[in-house]
Image 1 (cartoon, rainbow, N blue to C red):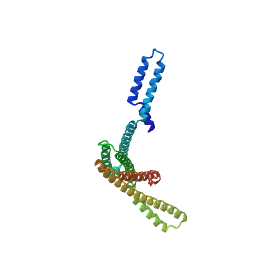
Image 2: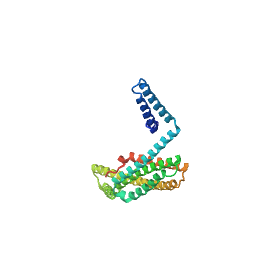
Image 3: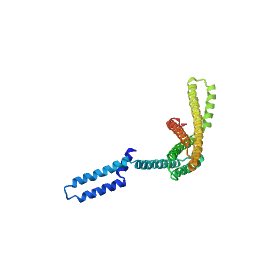
Image 4: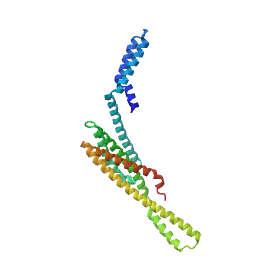
Length: 264
């Protein structure tokens, strides 16, 4: 922020104008002995103007406001990019479950984003809109994860594995050869672990779906309150809590994505 403030002060229109006028005055004295002093004086006047800008509370607030607006726009841009990525990576499950869910959340997001630029500015509204956009980002990531994993699960014929497991258990009861018995036991162990992983994945998908529904409801509720200019500290705290929970769930899912992906 300090770097941005300093850069803005350097290139502030007023300060650049002062520098140009001072240099112009120095150029008039180009033929005289005071030209070096005039140049030094021009630079000194410009430096003083820059320092004055840096110390100005109004200037600091103006730059701070611009930075906050930039941050809000950047979060909105991230939402759009992630949504487009989900659409590009779409599969059967996305069109079955995710398309309308994503569209609804993005419509709510657009209204939240546009509301930020309407009416009078308030710090509380800015923070609530910021957290709401972060929540949309977490939602899109979870939805993408859900669609990919749901597609993997639903494309797997678990009945085939269950039938093979039952058949091998029957074989085991009739087999007398020790080596053959060991081989069958290994196959049974593999199939039982695969079925256990399948059930675990199903439970995870149900958990993600429940979280997605909850986030959708939260975004929609806060959209109406933001549009109605009903912002409170409790809203911000609640949003931050949901964002942290969603981010933690997304991080956990990403961490185990490769290891938990079903392989049959």
